Image (cartoon, rainbow, N blue to C red; front, top):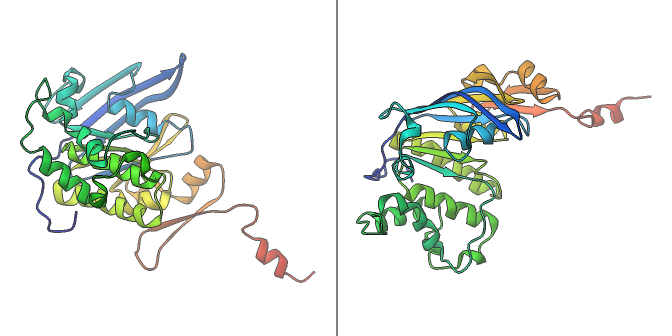
Length: 284
């Protein structure tokens, strides 16, 4: 998608909110009374150390993870949990990490999975389906692979095909769990640009789990920082990504500065060998 490109007729932003989200595995709480609001036209990035509960919170908001306690609402329904799965899937799409490699299916076949909420009960007509899939394949840069078998793709190509399926779903809320995994630098940048375009040009509400803090600072309007299943801070990148807070949460010294080219925040974790050059150049 490029600036000025015509919006898909099926896209319309929705607000999705969850409060008091508590999730337990084997009787142990791993997310504690968390709250998350995704607003139309905004990108919200969930960040934190491994095991902090970002992906679990996102999966719970997507109704793939059963919470011990939670309240889920959207701008059109007071109780998002009361929507049927088909109705919910017309509003919310989720790209999971670690999806399987389909066998015996073409790239187009995989992308067409995203159209299932729009088909009739018995797989009936979907008048806008072909155009929606074509748009999604083009937006993710895999249109030229449409007839190729999905089992012959690289991990990065397959990640973009699964994303195409989410875009073909034409929802107002898009949830992405570590979407840059398996992608090389070019496609990481292009995917994050696409996420930003979806929010800015189409009003999509985006929630994305990212482990790269610089990527989160570059793409997000708001950042939610989690640690040990709790939300530690929420706000703009400048409000959340402070050296003191990041150093405390990640357990390693983290410096925060400004990129002179873009003006965005840049982070740098300081390990034991970062000062090696200085030590070697110091006279004994």
